[in-house]
Amino acid sequence: MSKQLRVGVVGLGIWGRNHAALYSNYPRSELSVVCDMDEARARALAKKYGCAWTTDVREAAKQCDAIAVATPDFAHTDAALAAIDAGKHVLIEKPLATSTDEALQVWKAADAAGIVGMVDFHLRWSPDYLLISDAIRRGDLGALYMAYIRVSNAMEVAQRWLPWAHRSGPEWFLLPHILDLMVWILEETPRSVFARGATNIMGGSRQDCLDALQASFQFERAFVTVETSWAVPSSVPWVVDADFALYGSKGRVHFKPNDRNLNIAAERYYWPVPGEDPDRYGRLSHWFYDSMRYWVDSCLGLVPPTSTIADGVRNTVLVEAVLQAITERREVVIAFPKLESRPVSSAAAG
Image 1 (cartoon, rainbow, N blue to C red):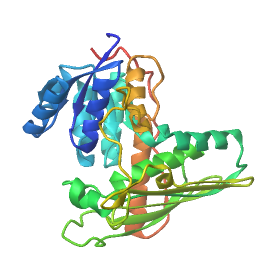
Image 2: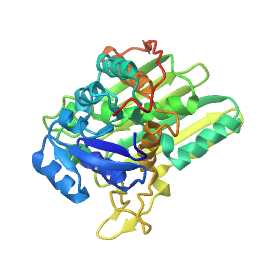
Image 3: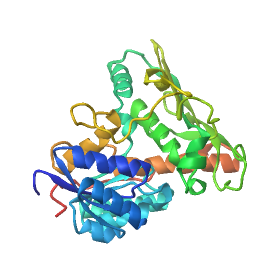
């Protein structure tokens, strides 16, 4: 493999465009092809970055070493399997899949192919959450016993940004981030969960999914409450409404991400969301690109994979356990599949 990883991006919506921007900007990668069912969108982005374009994942796979899957939540599995079947490394946006059966399909295919597979749980690369993780691992908080995590969206995300919102929901669009953060911070998986959910908050006919949910997880050493909603009124000044608190026998950490962001008062008061524009030095410097850079480096054999497909499988199991607890109105004991992976090879793709 060359020193530059030839990357293809499948799915060119809001987050897919960020992927394309990064691979065209990172010195260790080359954006070789973009792919989207919308031919005009694919053609326009290919023109912007000077790369090839296609509407077929299998055609895209012929022109790259690795593929980033940024399709809508429900469409991750087919795109990921097509890339893996072609022997390409994959980075799959969260969630890995919207069912445990599909998640296991992807894991088994990736394991058999020996490719580098990661799921883009990019909160693990947040400088703030890394500082929190370091404090916990040093023992600064003592024995952990309670936590609260919220990540919600303003209504406009579901109502205006995502035409496929009715096929997802905060349970698949937002909750995977929270659950991965929870498991990664505590360094263990929960034993059980009890949850409640709500629909019809926003009205309309798109109620094939939840609008909000709250869940309580029991770990060996702590209990954790998580909540997520994309029915937060759009009059709030930020798109993402988040809060994080963790309690231990010796201390507490409390982090409000919105308080750390740039805010602007113009016609309205708001927090701008970083996008595709490089900084003064021509770099895409925001931390949410770091998971993409890390995946490239992992495909090149420079660092070991992390936030793996196995992590993605367990994450999907957790989401389904929450949904089961909501449907059955009872505490659900969580059963994780056994996932024993073979060593991956950075040279798998060609």
